[in-house]
Structure formats: structure tokens, C-alpha cells
Image (cartoon, rainbow, N blue to C red):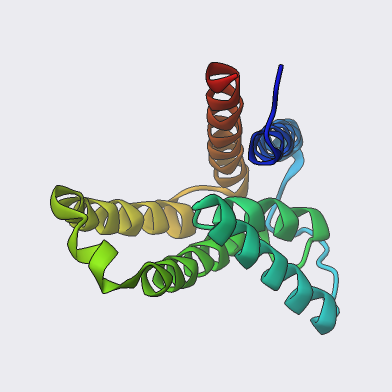
Length: 162
């Protein structure tokens, strides 16, 4: 198997995301809103945010998929708050990505721009269910499913390309 640096990175990323999703899935049955939170150290949080933003830009992934497991593991916020913070992080990274790509890349997206409205509607529904309808256990399981799906997709992509 001849991996490039990017291939190795995607392989490790896929494995880490899949593992984080599986851990979250098996731990979610004990998850409640009464989880003891840890205070965060601002310099560490800023460093983590910068690294995650860089990884998001490097991989073209919105970044919330990286941020959610870290917020959960560090216990900086309640489980449901994780989703809202990750969504905001994704929006900011997406805006930065669009700015970095330039107006030329945006205007040449053509038919893909029509996906914006359904994506926003889906995000609003997801926010509603995550914040108001689902328990912390359900939210954690859905987040785990997303992580396993994304990690698995990355692993499959690497396997197919090699």
C-alpha cells in the first residue's frame, strides 16, 4: 500500500472519528444533562480552536465533527450545548472557506448553490430537535452516529483509493 501524506492523514482522521463515535455511542446511555463540567483554560481553548480550524480548512470538513468530541471529552459544556457550539463553528469555518476560495469559486458552484436552502432548513430542524425535543441520551446517540458515519466514509474513501 502506497499512502501519500494526505492519505495517511485521512486514514488516521477516519479512525479517530470512528473510535470517538463508538465511544460516545457506548457511553451515551449513561449521559445526562447533570454532567459535571470542567472549567476551561482559555489559552488551551484558543489553541484547540485554532488547530481545529486549520484541520477543517485543510480537510474541507466544516469542523464541528472535530469540535464535538473534544467538547464532550473535555466536558467543557453540557451535551446538548455541544451541538449548538459545533454548528456555530461550522458556519464560521464555512464563511472562512468561502472567503478563502474567493468569489470566483462561489459563483462557479452552479447547481450546488441550490443545496443551500435545503441545508439551512435541515439545520433548523436539527437544531429544534437537538435542543428542544431529544434527551441528552438521544442527542449523544445521534452525534455518535454522525461521527461513525463520517469516520467510516473517510476510511472507505482511503480503502477505495489505495
